[in-house]
Length: 321
Image 1 (cartoon, rainbow, N blue to C red):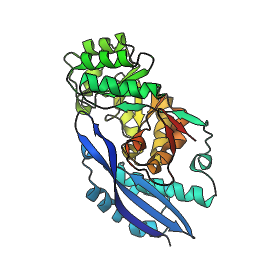
Image 2 (image 1 turned 135 degrees about the vertical axis):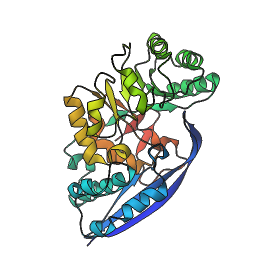
Image 3 (image 1 turned 180 degrees about the vertical axis):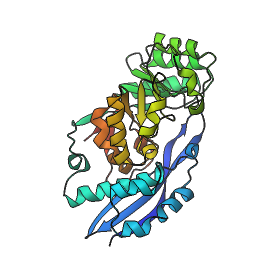
Image 4 (image 1 turned 120 degrees about the vertical axis):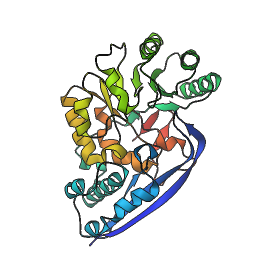
């Protein structure tokens, strides 16, 4: 039998995290702890209201399978018991962590992956005035960030981007609109981004409206985030997106994330690895994917006032392993 614990945690942020649809001052996560044969393991998820999730709903989902978990449920069996999403991710991550610890290996080695000593990660510039965003970009760039992920809503696009590009002329910029733009005017905005040297645009339109991207000629790659959850999403993305953003809280854990990465790459999509606002525990669970992606956006823990122990080692723009 396994011992199973399920609980919530709240982690204050040192700076508010502002995107097009929300602002938050804390990270609220759900943790699954497993103990088997004297070995303890854990997994974490961040419930996301955009997908109809809350801490309560995620915990309720997990609690429905606690008897099976106690009876040594496998990762393969889990895939059929819970749908993709945060709840399954917490359980799947805990099962991967348990298997790696029982093998006395790191998760990446257990998954057959060898990572470099450091990984370049995006650092996020959240929504503010053009002056605030430029100051943030300049500070991050001066501290060593090479890749900046710029959050935008539907306002002051050119003003914000021109200010950021002037403040961080050497940085690689990727832009994330979080579904806040509209088809009208999108071509002009894409050209503006290209003219400013932006490397990629993430999810400009609402997921339900992205058929507007079909046969839309654009001068820079467009990445699907909210439009891509699992392998089942891929069929509808062809001709609309060149890249997919893989997040364990969307796929329902590393098991499906690895399968999604395989299939997306086979179908010609470039890959990005993303995260929610989370602790180092959640980033560690995603690391087996890190050497397969064009862009890694793993700065979630860097927004926390205090991280979980043991924490991963971040410097601005870099995750050190």
